[in-house]
Amino acid sequence: MAEVKLAAQVRTEFGKGAARRTRRANQVPAVIYGHGAEPVHVTLPGHDLMMALKTANVLIGLEIDGKDALVIPKAVQRNPLKGDIEHVDLLTVKRGEKVNVEIAVHVEGDLAPGGNLLEYVQNTLLVEAEATHIPESVTVSVAGLDAGASVLAKDIALPKGAVLAGDEDAIVLQVVAAQAEEPAAEAAEGEGAEA
Image (cartoon, rainbow, N blue to C red; front, side, top):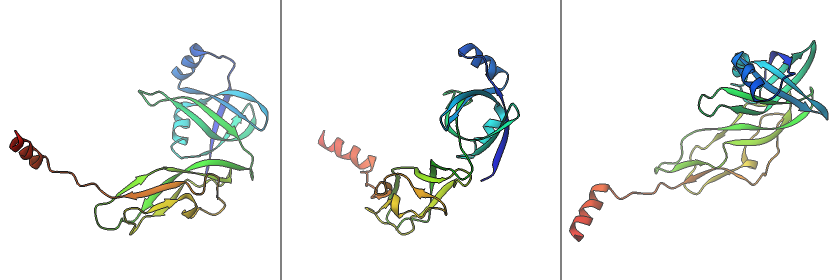
């Protein structure tokens, strides 16, 4: 995973008014915490941060007052209407350190014939990986699975260096039989005959 470099500025103003002024200047308020250190409140460039967060579990190299910090996003708060980033919580990490992150689950292949449906019980998987080598996603083959089949977390092959951190018996995907619906025209005829 590539490291994204961003320049951060320490924040001295707090509260709603200060946060609004920061956002109007195309900056995003953020807080950096971890390793038992005091939280550091910073502002980040809005557009650059938005582009960086398009990659899940992105590794961000911050430059704060001449010092470097390595962080990963822990929580991103967005405006519910516009989708703009309003605030970000960042977790400090060190090279070689293991972290727990959620990675996306993607599927490939076609189910067995018969009109069955694939249900995502979980669309992410909790794994432990080195902070500088976090996998973006995991791919699961559902080729030939029939109704009633399920894929457990322990059945998914993880990328090298990643270890399952969640419940290994948790169902991630399951195949359910498609339910036949009575055609609307036949139902209407049936109701007319009863009347």
